[in-house]
Amino acid sequence: MNARGALGRYGEDLAARLLADAGMDVIERNWRCRAGEIDIVARDGNALVVCEVKTRRSQEFEHPMAAVTPVKADRLRRLAEIWLDRHGGPPGGGVRIDLVGVTVPRRGAPVVEHARGVS
Image 1 (cartoon, rainbow, N blue to C red):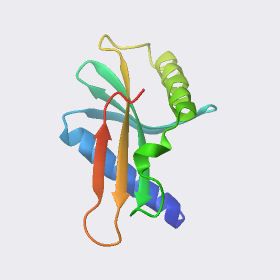
Image 2: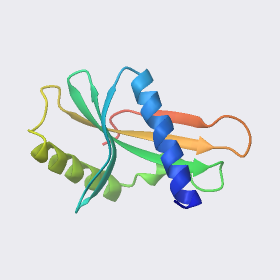
Image 3: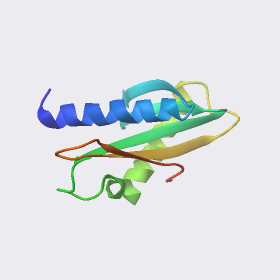
Image 4: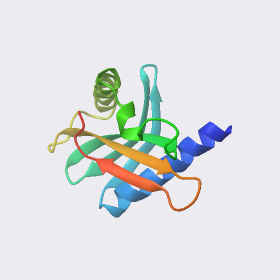
């Protein structure tokens, strides 16, 4: 794994921990199909959460939350539909798309931010 892949994996680990600490059940990570990948699939009560994780080093690039464009949000909605089709349909609580942004500074603790219902 290269440095970029390791950084992304680290961010996903932090995101999964944050979601679990918030009371969600992480049921799948890095789910892939021909249309793309869902970073984290979780349950929040009776709702299904499709979570995109964006990790950046410090402030060298745009804020991680800015990386989810309308095109990316559309792709996440399509991926959620495919996942639901393959896993028995939507739960009673519906489906939500969340974003976790992770900023890893050169020194100090990472900053992990969770935005619910971004799309």
